[in-house]
Every structure is written in C-alpha cells, then in structure tokens.
Amino acid sequence: MNQKITYNLPNGISLTIKREDLLHPFISGNKFRKMKYNLLQAKAENQETLLTFGGAYSNHIAAAAYAGKEYGFKTIGVIRGDELGDKIAENPTLKFAQECGMQFEFVTREAYRFKTEPDFIEKLRTKFGSFYIVPEGGTNEYAIKGCEEILTEEDATFDFICLAVGTGGTISGIINSALPHQKVLGFPALKGDFLKDEIRKFATEENWQLITDYHFGGYGKVTDELIQFINQFYKQTQIPLDPVYTGKMVFGVIDLIQKNYFPDNAKILLIHTGGLQGIAGMNVFLKSKNKTVIQFQ
Image 1 (cartoon, rainbow, N blue to C red):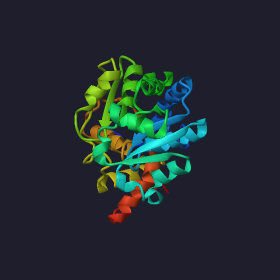
Image 2 (image 1 turned 180 degrees about the vertical axis):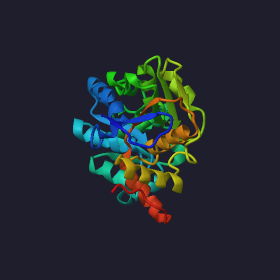
Image 3 (image 1 turned 90 degrees about the horizontal axis):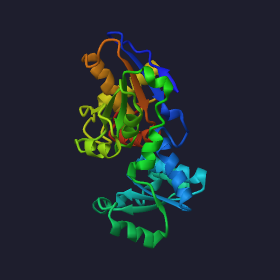
C-alpha cells in the first residue's frame, strides 16, 4: 500500500511511502518478501527444519520463527552472543521467537564470525540433524526474487526509490525491478563501504547509489536526534518508523531534500521495510540509559 506523506516540502517535491510494514503482522516488510521463496524451496527439498542466524534483537530471527510456526517448520536460531542464553525472558525478540517454537544455539561473537564455514555448519548438522539454511538477514537468490516483487506497476511514476540497507538483499531486488528512468538510493544502517560488492553479486544494473552518511554511528546505534525525529514524524503522519533501518533512511531523505539534493518536482518513493518489532528492545535499552523512548501514541 502506497501512502502519500503530507509533509511541508520545498521545490514541488513529493514523498510517498510504500507500507511494506503492513504486509503481515509478524513477518514484516522485506522479511515477508525474503522468506516467501525460501519457504517454497525448503518445501521442495522436503526439509522440515529451518536454521538461520541473527543478533539479540534481529527482525529476521523474529520473522523466521513466526514463519516456521505458520508454515509448519521447526526453527533453529543461531544467536550471536553466548551471554544471552540466560536472558531470553528479558529480551522481547528472543522471547517472541521462543514462544513461536524456535530453538536457540547461542555462540560467542568470535565463533559467530565463522557461521558460514563448512566446519561450523557441519557441527550444527551433527547436533540438530538435517535443516534448510536461511542466511543471516535472509539474503540469497530466493530472497532477491521475492524482493523483486516489491515494486509494482503503480510505482512507475516515481523518479527515486529510497530504502534502508542491511545485508543488501532488498535493495538488490529493487535495483533489478526498477525502471530505466528511476534512481535507487540505499541508506546503509551500518558503517563501511563493503555492501557494494554484496549488492553486485545479485544486482545487474547501475541505477543505484549508497548514501552512507546516515548510519548514526553504526548498526543498532541511535542518537537523541534520531529518536526525536521518529517520534515527531509519527505525530505528523501517524506512520511508525523503526530506529535501526527505516527511521534512519527517512531522516536521511528529508535531510537531503532540505540540502537541495533532489531536483525540483522530484517524486520520491520510500520503502518501509518493517522492523517495528525491534522497537520494544530498543526502548528497553533507551530506558536503561534514561533516554527518551520511541512513542507511537
């Protein structure tokens, strides 16, 4: 669903947001897109168990857990941080995933770096038996195929397509399905320029650019300014934004508009990739620091 944003914008520029966050109550936004063809492939391979990877507040872990529950798969989550093993009840994301039936394997941060190595995977197979691997963040060829379905015919009128970037899967699908006159702008949620190589593994066009100035300190990092923006944006539009991905992207787009980055009368489409489940965990962190929390009321 596309929703026009009634924001006071200069130079005839218009903003519309594609509410992918409304696709499914628990398998939200791009996670729904990424899981779709992975689930079909797992069925085709007669696999009964999904195994995937993620951090403490991972949107992907929550989505994979619920997808398994809804579509009849057992699920295993390999979680970064062995100290989290006895803190499930304190963590809204892990608690939700466990309630959906997900079994956890907590590993140290050092060991987690080797999660794609054959020896690491083989040890998991020895422990858990046969499973279908969904990569961290869900990004693989099946995820790209699903994300290519985000843009529809009604989106042909837009000049710019803007979205947050995590592992590079969603933007790859958008790049592949964007029209020749459209420019795709990705806003990485983490530091570093390594994502370009990841995106080029799946995307064949050159109609895109990464805007790397709006990560707010790195993955999962936020500032008072960002939280205030998210709260103010909701008051003005009634659209909730997550602080890890889409909130940073929308902040960046509006900042660029004010800096005259976009041409006059540009039609900009923002992709809301979901991730709202992570807000509960972020608010736990913000409260512990006596900071302003995210409020949608």
